[in-house]
Image (cartoon, rainbow, N blue to C red; front, side):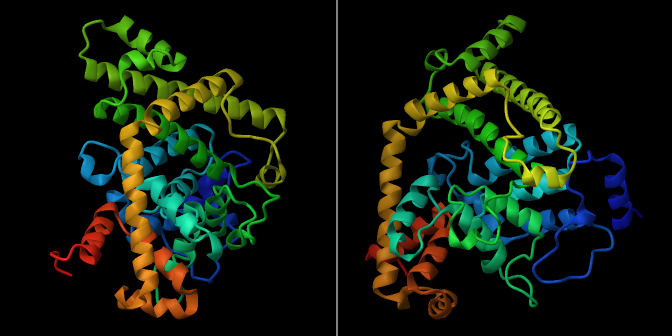
Length: 383
């Protein structure tokens, strides 16, 4: 049997000097005895996967609302795809794969139903009560809301994973993440998780955009990254069916971006003389990044997706409907908290009404939010 100590020794022998090592973790908020066969970061990964919040990602929107079809990405499939990329990059750079995996799996736990549309309206509704941001909510879930252990709230993850989630936030001055020093950089594994997340959603949103009919090959020909990958795929085999062309082009773009990210990051680490995890924490440079050319190509791709997919009239309509659902649910609960489930009502006294309501709504899936909407507002729906 391979023990935890054996895994920790393997990390010492194989990981790069600037990698995070499980036996050097800053620890957990609530002390626990070590697992006999898993490292601290392996244990974190497993706790995230077994959490209720992780399971609910299966029915939460990525771009397309759940009932739009079974072939689109959900928040769960996106998370798994991003995690796979993060592990590949971490492995190539001799970083801690399990830590990169744990951060990747946890980073979207706090997403609302209906994707960023739900997040935007919930932030607006919570403006006078601390606001709402899904990254901060992800941290809140793993630190407070998941109730699986009698000895402590949350999942009691290691500091490195929690710091990685906190540093994913676009609000570094948020009081909820004040303990995670904004002047310090996260570990490389967490930064890789961020970059892998972007690679995953950019490319898979192309796939879903084509599948939905909102994007076409002709439109994408204006994007250099797509154009070059398309030419390379078609040159290899001019008889491919369009669906196979699509898959192979996306595959090529992901491969190019991952390879570029690894090479550029290695160069960054050499140039800035990064030799330890502490060097990483103290550096203010962008250590994990594309090279200059790929960064420009990626910006062009993101701009194209915003203009042609995220701002597409069908997506805007879905967004507007989603915001109405969330707004009316929030207002109904706040007008009479007795409509809330008993466990949520019990949290009102300690958390405040609005925060308890926001936690409840954020934890819903697209499907459960729509069902709840019908129960509250459709007179013919059974409650």
